[in-house]
Amino acid sequence: MFSTSTATISFFFFLLISLAAIHAGDNGPSYSKLRHGYYSTTCPDAEITVKNVIRKNMIIDPRSAASVMRFQFHDCFVNGCDASMLLDDTPNMLGEKESLSNGGSLRSYEVIDEAKANLEQICPGVVSCADIIIMAARDAVLFSGGPDWAVKLGRKDSLTASQKDSDDIMPTPRANATYLLNLFQKFNLSAKDLVALSGSHSIGKARCFSIVFRLYNQSGSGLPDPAMNPEYRKKLDKLCPMPDGNLSVTVDLDSTPELFDNQYFKDLVNGKGSLNSDQTLFTLPETRKYVERFSRGEKEFYEAFVKGMIRLGDLQSGRSGEIRRNCRVVNQLVLGRRTEGVSRKTSLT
Image (cartoon, rainbow, N blue to C red):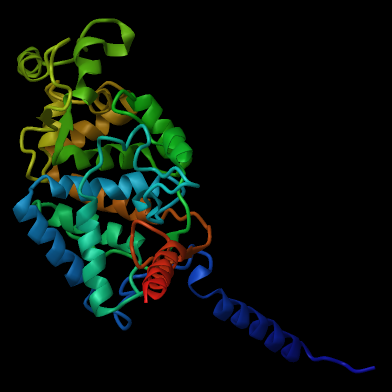
């Protein structure tokens, strides 16, 4: 019989954990500890590369700023920030792109594709698509005149996506503030976080499809929202007439749609919110106080928005992940396509 010291047991336990981590590789858990400067040694130009792509695309299409910023919301709420929303459908999987809140609404996927392609040129297989979404959202806000902040990185990309999960979780523009407050609380996000992050609608546009509910059938009453500013209603009536209007026509989300500022909150105070999910923030007591505070203080809004984006970015699924080489497909499919291409070429020779 032999004895084993506590130190020896500890050493072998540490060795076992270390080997497990090594063998996990890119398919290990996606809930690795996030930190600032994650790519400082493995891909030091990662953040500037993403910044350059966002800046270039905003010059070409100013609306792309709001589009790529929205990706963080639509990705992180559905099973954590893992770029699941970027996956295309496959014969065996319905992804999130055509879910109720995403289909016909999300755009500018090609901006993320471009950032990923550029990163694959300089440091292949290093930077995750999930981290690109987080960086792109920050840069879109910054280049729209909003605040800057340091992002924590180190996420993995999911191996799957779920249209059902997106349908079950993501709210529609018809949602009211009470529904949104309950949703945010499920993710340990406060009423202040809800109002501050709703300030993302400081930039961008919405389709008439998302507005006519408030304009013509508030709460199923067949009547417009009584809180709507009369002059603003006349403006929307012209842009989104019913029943013969074009529901794809876009409407500014606030009075300064290309500038990230606190005008969004001033508009809500004056009954000029475009979406039901926006304007009801001013009618619910728990959220109204923050709308009023942010309408008076842009600096306070910026500080709360940054904190909210960081908290949102901390949401992780805990599922296995990888660093995708192409944000639209998992690596196994990319490898399969390459192998198939080689086989076809071989069969022709």
